[in-house]
Amino acid sequence: MTVNSVSDRAERKRTLTRAIAASIVGNTLEWYDFFLYATAAALVFGDLFFPVGRDPLINTLVSFGGYAVGFAARPLGGLVFGHVGDRYGRKTSLFWTLAIMGLATFLIGLLPTYAQIGIWAPIALVALRVAQGIAAGGEWGGGVLLITENAPAGREGMFGALSQSGVGLGFVLSTFAFYLAGLLPPEDFASWGWRVPFLVSITIFAVGLFIRFRVSETPDFQAAEAEGPQQAPLAEVLRKHPREMVVGIGARLAETCGSHLFITFALAYGKAVGAEVDTLMLGVTLGMLADSVMMPVFGALSDRFGRRPVYLFGALAMLAFAYPFFEMLESGSTTLIVLAFVIGNGVCHAAMIGVQPAMYSEMFSARVRYSGLAMAHEVSSLIVGFSPLIATALYAHYRSPTPVALFLGAICVVSASSLLLWRPKR
Image (cartoon, rainbow, N blue to C red; front, top):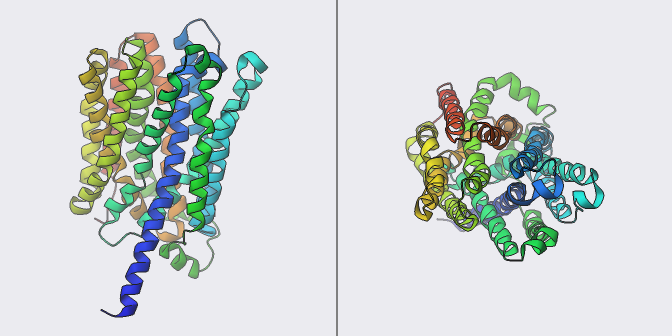
């Protein structure tokens, strides 16, 4: 082995390590921010920013409407930053997504409430939520490509799944932050305690920017750039990859809907059926830790057995577990509640989200890859971004988890069917 080959291997390893760190930190901030909002929407935002009625469930329902608006903005972010990433580089796009996300979250922590400035409070909150959504719409695709386009051949599934580890880390950090804030007396928590988790996000933002300044462009983008600038990547995606767009959108519906219902709606539902908040938070925390641990496992399995079989397992497992999940939350048993979150997130959800980075990267050519996977990912977010709102409305009307489970089951069937249209390379 020559000195040059050893040096090249060491450089590739350093590049991959930096790419993994940059992707995980950005993904952690993205999901820390989103889970903060989701938790606050379930616990405090309804009364502080959307006090429309005397029934707390109705206030929570309206609050989830503000939560869903962020998902409506994600396709715009995918469109804008996908174009930037394909034309000007992954690094340039990811700098701006991180900056917008970090600043929007910090500003939420400074907002006055409805009691202080009236209607301007929810308007400002929703506007910042939209900014979060736009940034998140561009963040996921770039973070995925930083790793998959630097990963060793044949191990894209395992390494790509690491880009999703920030989902669990972001949730654990946000949950821990809210747990500490929740130790305050109720009046202090409602007055200022809930703001602290939003304000401390600026530290993750600073670390993320530092790491991303040191990241190099991916080899795939450099090769695509050498062919000439890409003028209209989204148009080329729609012209050359229509099947992949349909598959990408449809396949992700179950993963996203399940994530919303097994986390965001589950907190509100658990409170409604009398579960202790501490038990729910423990369950979600352990569930998200299991999710993060199992993502690379399922990613590695997809390297061995193929993307579609592993992803299909996750969709069908979520279909089978939809009703038992809510029954376990209603049981009153701490063990069953925690187990529900661990199975729902660490098995059903992880089997899909762990495969997504490699699977979606393989669907599109390098010249339009950022735009293709970002739009497929974010359009699906828009379609099921309202699932906590729908689930809350179903439960408010029927006072039963059965319609909610049927709703999730139907989404899982759509995702499983979409996978049959795909012609995978592996």
